[in-house]
Image (spheres, rainbow, N blue to C red):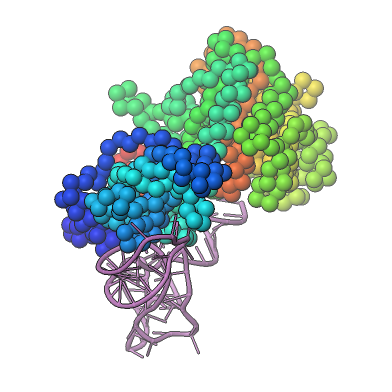
Length: 513
RNA sequence: GGGGUAUUAGCUUAGCUGGUAGAGCAGCCGACUCUUAAUCGGCAGGUCGCAGGUUCGACCCCUGCAUACCCCA
């Protein structure tokens, strides 16, 4: 079947129009166009000015955008052009633009991109508009856009064809602009305070710095197995060893895990390390950074997230994990107890016990199971058990716990931070117990990283480190219910063309592995 | 991995207890030089996600598959 036969009726008509335009000497995919104003600039500058005054001044402007609505009236017509800033109405009269240009305008479809030069005026209903003197076709649209009134609703199409979503749903654009502004504000805040933005490899020979399954890839020339990074931590700490004392990296992290409203296989994190600081310094930095971004970008620290009122103004609540568990469940993990006693407590409270679970794992399970979802207002939970914190320094007074915190808002983890473990001998033991967990079947446990250990053996200053999930932060600040709403192109399952090609694809993957 | 819901024209959708699919927008032809979900007259557009099954007859019932969303682990 030829491509031509597959075209819908609407597409065929638009291709015929393309042909007609060319026959009349009009390039349907035009050239550069110099704009004097965006739609919003015109509305901002001239909306308040009186109709008569505008007519007297005869202000000429050039605008460009996608035609989103068209109302023909015989030898004249109105249309709305949409650019990144918004929409503005144009008024096209045959006696102003000439017969040939008007014929071209009549041939234009919704979705076409036009350039217009003309004069600002007010219609009799008071809408600030541009009366065209010249009208140019900048790009012909060969496919019909979704419906003008209801827009594009189908979530699958919205994610797969984000450009349509951006054209049709203005609040989507707002969300992604906000995302960009949040990142700008974050960088500015840190840069002004002497933090150095760095870039470290996304391909690692040993995936480290987090408990997660990696993606595996392969370098052909070196015939080397490589992993997509699951964290930036271990490289950034090497930089601290190297004497870069305040560093951060904003970058993509890859984790080979399921997909949900809160998880995408690739996401963006910021990790930050500061020499001679500890987790308490990082706590203050975290709340000040996030509150600053909120104020800077949105002008407020009070947010509504899916019906929850959240106040981001510091100082935020701080509570030890064991106290938080005690508060919610009444179970007290402070007294010394054996691993067996902890497991008994878990069984009593119907908490699933992972094989080989120790005291610290049980404490963590209790927290995740009972406490997490109750933490709506920003809360620093600190003092994580050493068993679940292989890269954090032990607490001086109670070595069962570490000097670590996680930030929770609306029941979700938003940040993870600790006083970094800088004792290479202790770090080696932590890796060794992680290896035991791996052998016991936990494929998220850390691998031994000799190169990183070697760097620690040269001496790393006491250091505070931080990780924030950028996507979740953007979700919170833009009231987005799903991570897919803050990712321009979330990962979607491949659409199978036919069953046969699907099987072939499967076989290809088998050979690789 | 388990459960639920959805998939009908380019888009947004209706479709009763099984009787052979209806609309709005967009589109096409015509009218219209201040319209704005423009209006008026006419026209066209459907593999009802895919593959089987039950039935005289399936958009509707059953099975499998695909994709998406939600909940649970």
